[in-house]
Amino acid sequence: MTIIPNFDDDDDDEGRKLAIICSKGNLDMAYPGLVLGNAALGEGVETHLFFTFWGFDMITKSRMHDLKFSPVGNTAMHLPMKDLRVPQALAPMPGMTGMATKKMKEQIADLGIPEVPEFLDQIVAAGGHLWACRMSADMQDLDETDLRDDVEGIINAADFMEMTKGAQLLFI
Amino acid sequence: MPVATIAGQEIHINDEGYLTEYDEWNEDVGQELAQNIGIDMTDDHWAVIRFLREDYKEKGETATTRRVDKVGGFPTKQQFQLFPKKPGKKMSYIAGLPKPHGCV
Image (cartoon, rainbow over all chains, first blue to last red; front, top):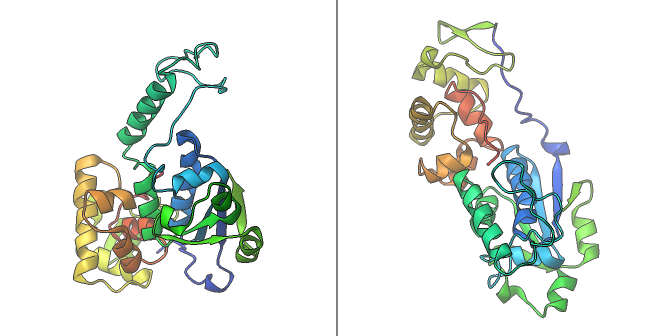
């Protein structure tokens, strides 16, 4: 007997569609949207990433290489070894954010996962669409020239609603 | 474990149809697997499949699309052109390997 995997190639008409709203600019919160968006594209799902508020830093040329991970306010944070928690009183000490960011970047790199800008390159190469939020651009006084060249447009909330008709939505 | 006849040979497969024995695969089998999912194999397709086979032999796990890009040298875009929509799964199926295990 032969079993052929079902790759759903015939589902074109009612194709699945996913929109991910990336609203955070912390290093750790940049990744969930990227990992899931990349996975969706690999499953043949039409995928749109919409960057808003602090998530804008992920696509802003001057900031996208420099996202940080901070232990401040993160009571769940433990050190990479054992189950040692970081006391919240120490979290805001000078150097803590730098140290935590460096460590997290190392762990991510060890898994062969790219940094944020390169990850977005991969998502675009896989057919993903990047969109920027109009209000965030206006608030930060940024325009297309400040953003990655592959951002397809700065769009407003109504445009986004129209574009994501029938899509599944993730807010991160 | 189901046994299928592919390219005239008895081949072990799992419930989804992926091969389970690395050594039961050869290019005739790959050719038939590709036909099963509507892919016409060209030299470019074979180059990717051969990389996946070699890489699996070395690493013991199926390369993800990212690894096929970074280590194999086949750009993501090309992978999507050759194996439309679900390159990771389609490549591994044709190569007679398990689906990729990694997230990225």
